[in-house]
Image 1 (cartoon, rainbow, N blue to C red):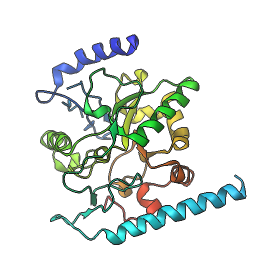
Image 2 (cartoon, helix red, strand yellow):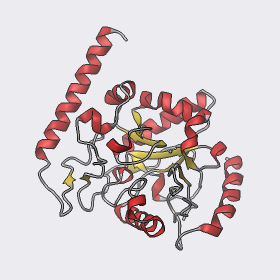
Image 3 (cartoon, helix red, strand yellow):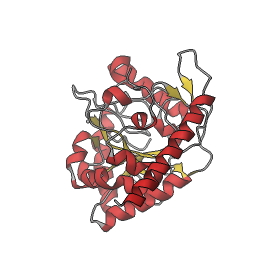
Length: 283
């Protein structure tokens, strides 16, 4: 922990000269030509510095069928549309909920069981972004324990984010980079996975706590890509799937969906949209 605190202190000094706004709370995205990086912000507003056996197969197929049936029922109930033509998800508390550019959370939605997972963060303050839904938080603890056992030191960066927080973050990106560019790496308020309480951005001390596509080439990124599904998580925005998810590659963005479907999604190299048969969010 002392090592993390020293690195955070050094990082804070280097970022303070380019901070956006009065207080900082979430990671920020790179607006370089590849939009490959999101820098973890200082504790309090973002700085904007712009990538087996037959029986087991049978069980897996049954689980996928049940999950698909659940989503089909949710689709049937999703009749409400916003003025922008977005679908309002019918069951936001479902851990398999699909939230994207076309599917938003109900107005005023706050996850019911937010808690702080017992994992290392790059900051010590008790901020809302430490929180996740209880089930997801417990599995994140198991994931971090598994990584540590394998000699991999992961660090949590950003979890739950309220509607208002996301609104400020997105607006900041729009002002800095324009709305078209911002839409490629940041979600409009109400459509962010972070508001579900089921997502957590993960980094490492070796990355200087930054969120960058190069994370995938690190030992930590490699382990996460190969083992996250074992704990019910998926890499939500995979490489080369921008046209489907609507966002650029984010090897650091973990999304909890439950162990019953995470392995299927991983093994089939699918996105959440593809798995449940939703039209591409990027369209």
